Image (cartoon, rainbow, N blue to C red; front, side, top):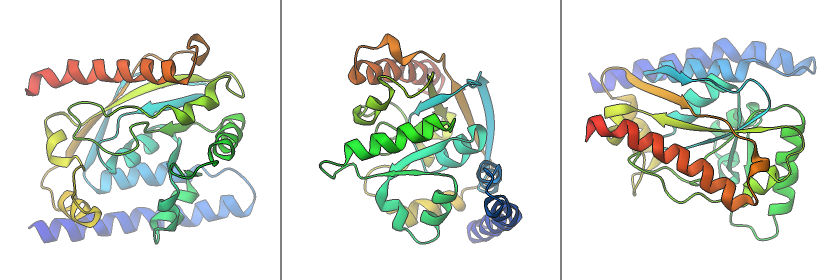
Length: 246
């Protein structure tokens, strides 16, 4: 049954891609901003078993989303719900198929370990925000076990001080409830093994996107204070909603 579930979910993913790819390429060909990448991400999330519930209110204006990071499924559910472009390590751009798909969603690839690259990366982020593109960042820099937060890396948050236009920071707590420990991707688990494990998982995967109160980055004196404020709000939500399962 595990192999059958994996095959069926892979087939559903392929069908989602075929459904969205042709109209997406058409919109790109006529020079218009395509609405299809977030639709694909939402369908892909359902294909792998995710069932999304929204808690709170997504900010309707220009937003910079800061979220905790538990699994690669985060990208499917958060991107599908918000239409945000993600900030990702530039190594992903070289992944077969995945890198190309990420580029279709206007992913902003950054080289976190390359000295002297920060200035150009901030320019790329400013351009995205100036074009009314919602941006999502996982400031932990990697996935965790979901029971807490790794330290936030504040470097890229410098783009918000000051922002290129009126932008609100919206912290988001991605909450898988009692399934958190089971689906989290951390430690030394290879990517392929994690994908296989989740694709073979029985049942649906309930995930709640908790949109926390947005705030103006102008109230923060520097990027470290901004990171600390976002981290505190997400950590408080994790603690509040982890209690029933501990």
